Length: 212
Length: 212
DNA sequence: CGCCGCATCAACCGATCGGCCGATGGGGCC
DNA sequence: GGCCCCATCGGCCGATCGGTTGATGCGGCG
Image 1 (cartoon, chains in turn cyan, blue, red, green):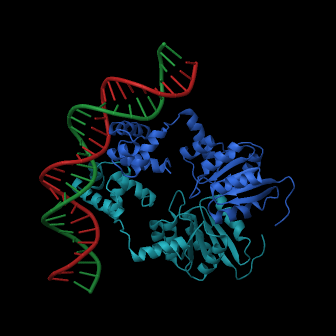
Image 2 (cartoon, protein in one colour):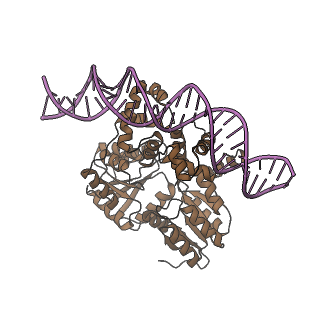
Image 3 (tube, helix red, strand yellow):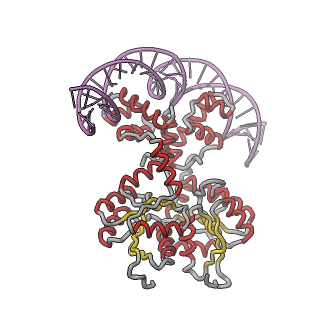
């Protein structure tokens, strides 16, 4: 433990993988102006520690195994105000990016980024400035130009049942609607996902990480 | 750069995420008897560096983005002999574990493991001794007791086409077989995966990471 | 108030799927 | 030479799916 500069950026790590946390801790230890003040292995823990420690920046992974996910944790931390959340994850799908930004993330960095970029993004995030990894920025821009069809809540419900392998009748019963309605929703889902079969829809949904 | 002990375990890192590599590098730097002699961001790079540097242990992630995956890289490195591969990944599905072991991995560790376990596993791997994370060991034991049905190559072919959303006729044409054969394979796939629809099969396949 | 997105439902029809039977041939193993 | 796994194929049938058109009601928005 070395004494850190008084004005150092105070960081809370949140990642469900202990090895990754330890790695980040060691890595950030090389930067004198960055100080890790806490570690969380789950979303709930991160929310609690963020409130208790009031760090400048929370480094948040999106996939957290059990419990609330990184998006939900980000939302809760961001909603309390005062603490910036910098997402650091491996995924760069539209769904993940959109949800994280909507939840109030200050920045979105990929683990594939160079460490120097991470350091810079942390310092920026401490000041409330947004940093996006290039691939992420590209996707955001593409979104602005040609808004991809977004599935409605109900359509996601149907998609969830669909991925369980249920037939239209079972989906209808599970959601308390008629079979006709299920078929109508399915047709729109096919349109939006650019497929024309249920198997294709499930495939795209899993790849786009539209389902938990 | 500090001078390492002469008899230190020589490590080659392989992970497609630069931040993770940097984190591991910093983390392992805290252990005097472990020396990182190289880094690879792809499977091809890892194979080449393993041959060139002949490290004691390759720390190998399974998901490597583009190019060959960690399993294939493990196979090539293990086949040349003399270099032990210790898999360090986030996934603990049967398919991943089975393939990695079959490819010749010396050990299989999860990133959720404590750093001390990682250090210990590295030292063991250098001596050719196997280390498995507890959840991984459990799955291996379960496998021994009740061998899960394994999909044949051909069935995986069908499954791949299925996940593209193709109909039986298209699958038949794509694989140069008759529609009847496709249906026969599908039936067995359903049996083995414990489903009874194509959508369900795709869902299980994606979750079990049976498809690339 | 009118417009629009969303969710809901109906009826129809051809194409496809899933399950069932049985069959052949090749390859590895003892 | 048997035995078993795997891949291949055929036919049959009822159930289901996918596409279409059209309709209703509800809520937000200007």
